[in-house]
Structures are given as C-alpha cells and as structure tokens.
Image (tube, rainbow, N blue to C red):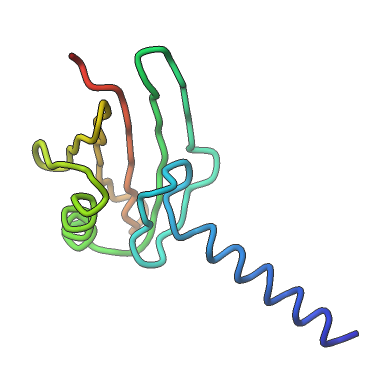
Length: 116
C-alpha cells in the first residue's frame, strides 16, 4: 500500500511539472526556467477579429536574462520580432512586459489581433 501512495504522489508531482512548462493559456510559449504562473491572472476574450489574451508568470530572475531567453526562443516558435518585447505571428501580436515586484520579476504576456 505504501508503494501505491508513492507512485500516485510521483505521478501528481510529475503532472504538475509538465503543466507548468508553458505559460498558462499560451500552450506553445515555454515558461522561463522554474518561473511559475500567477493564479487568477489569465484572461481570454475570443472575438470575431481575434483573441485577446493576458497571462502572468513570476520568479526570481533578472529581467535581461528573461528578455534574452524569449528573444531567442520566440522566433523558433514562429513569432517575428517587431520591436523590443513585441512579436507578431499570423494575425496576432504578442507583447511582453517585465515588472519587478517584491524582489521578483513578473512577466506579463498579452496577445491581441493585428490592426490591419
């Protein structure tokens, strides 16, 4: 019975780790290192002109380190750099903001439709 509980515990820990590999709501944008999603920050509006999405992560890392990571990773996922911290893919714009709160860096991801 004790082995059963260890297996179940391992399964749930592994499942949580897999779920945290991507920014909540952005299934193809990876989370930087071991940063974590901030509960209750995910917002999604799906409209005729496209989706509006908002999600936040936080962790104890330097802003420049996180910026460099997304600057390198996002083009591999089809996002083209428009300007600093702003990317385009298909009919969407991804904007990333970096804020420092209580000694942690908060990263804010916003997706909106392109203005044609």
